[in-house]
Length: 383
Ligand SMILES: [Zn+2]
Image (cartoon, rainbow, N blue to C red; front, side, top):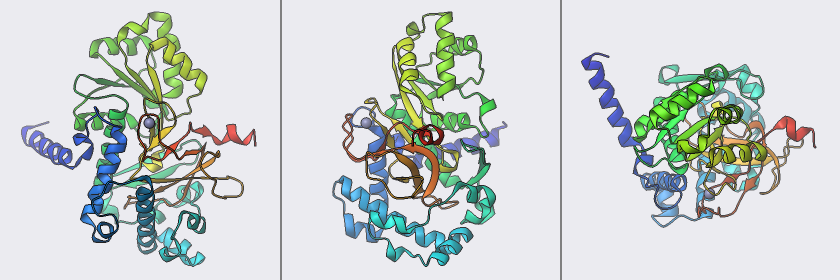
């Protein structure tokens, strides 16, 4: 990089840093992800006349946040009805407009978005002009359907912001910590490692990417870089743990948290990983088409905290599409509340979970939480 490029990059980094709410969140009190979510919602209320009238500047409770999310959903229905060719046609067909959505029961009136529709015609979902697209990602996810999703620059920054808060919740709290990113590139149709590494740069944390599947190489990097946290796909971390344990006593390496993502982590896998490393392993869930950073477990390991301001989560019966009450297992359905580029409304994930609608043992009482996410195949075979 030459000098003008260096200066331009440094200016861009500083502008980006100023926009990140997660940088202001302290890991020392409360749950960082919840604090970030509340700060983000409050910021939005403060700049919107209608929201301000409704919520003022009082402390938000669980019901306020539910009401806020419902309003954002109505706003989004209006937005896609004007801007997305796909939703414009779909909602006109159903005679649906936002005035019909006034409670969570009314969500059932909104048609579900099927993955094959996104796979077949991604650009029908697009709400902005193509010149506003900063990056596009293609994901096969768990259903072997190629889905293309586009993001604006502002949305990428929002994703990075939520990743930083999630990392803070996982225990990264200063430049003393180094995150070792272990995504083997062969399994990624896009690179979550790069998003994580960028998030660390902007969040003021150190990170190192090692995408080797060789356990010795990963162990060497841990020692060389003073790694304190590890992230990777659940199966990779599990296999790495078994191999690393044959090489040496990894408890001495000082790893304080392991984040297992992209794939279900069973209780047995978790037990093995935790006993070998002598630290907690937490679950993370995200889908490329939803922006990757959707939910992550806290220290309490009692369900995954959802990125509350950005997503509305429902659980439905996959056969009847009926909305299920909290605690009941079914298919996760997600609405991207704040996306402007390619928003998805009531998107069927084909993943199975249940909503936890109560306070978490970490003290967080505002976040929506979901239980350990499973694959549809594991669920279907039992139902
Ligand atoms: Zn918690």
